[in-house]
Amino acid sequence: MKIAHLACAFGRHSVDAGKARKVHGGMVGRCRHCATPMEEVMPQHWTVQHVRDAGLGDRMLG
Image 1 (cartoon, rainbow, N blue to C red):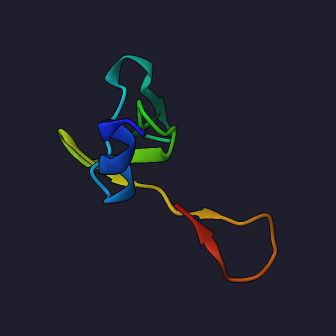
Image 2: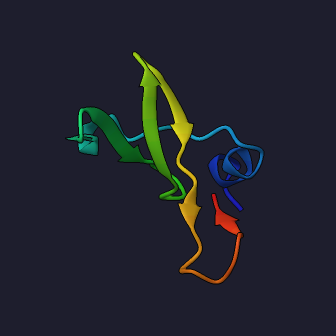
């Protein structure tokens, strides 16, 4: 197991800034190690987006 994947498991994601794009006025991207969707809430501050789990209830992915 790579150290980066272990860091992602503890919530220390790192965004791939080269592939980030602007959507509806905000920047979105993915973690460069585990591909978790992330959004920029303040300049240079990224948080994990909560994505609905295919309509299977109130569970959230991410």
